[in-house]
Image (cartoon, rainbow over all chains, first blue to last red; front, side):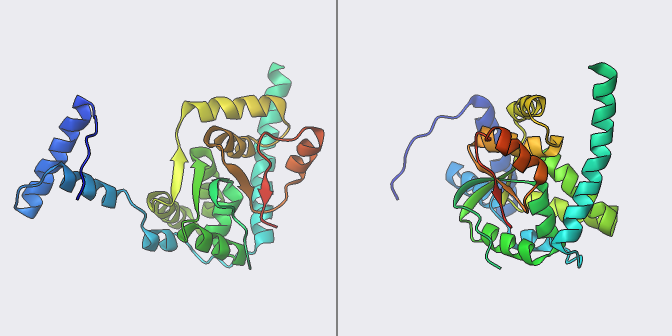
Length: 88
Length: 142
């Protein structure tokens, strides 16, 4: 595999070494920067199962959602108008 | 239902997130568009907050928290925490008669050069567009 050089700050290097220590302990073998970055990239990746678990199937219709939003924003607007009246 | 979320970078309004969480037909289409990874979706914490309180009013705090947490941690949304987003939102609110939360949707769009996406047409936004177009034209899903 072709490799390349990247520049990172001393602080980031320290953090990578900290993660490397944890990873090394967990895996029971020596790890290098490649392993640490691969691990972090995987960890920071997208989790489709988690995304789908956010759906609650509330039985709401789009119209009901629009009404709920409009009601909330009307409450906010009253507060904003009161502030503007008082200070402008 | 076919929801035409553009490829590239989009800024999602709370209305889109609530449709997704609510499991509506439109929300299911947004979910598929997100999971197909055709676009990078940006949101602000203010839009996340609005989503959570609206969902909370429907299903209660615990379920709303759990759902929004899953959405935020799924990695499919880039939540913009840049001070520039707040400054841009304030500038938009100063000039436009639209809700603060909508200002955040437009601010995230401006800062990330994204298309602002709303679940449905909003009278306030349309009125403002007629007065003067926004830097980035909003997309209404219906």
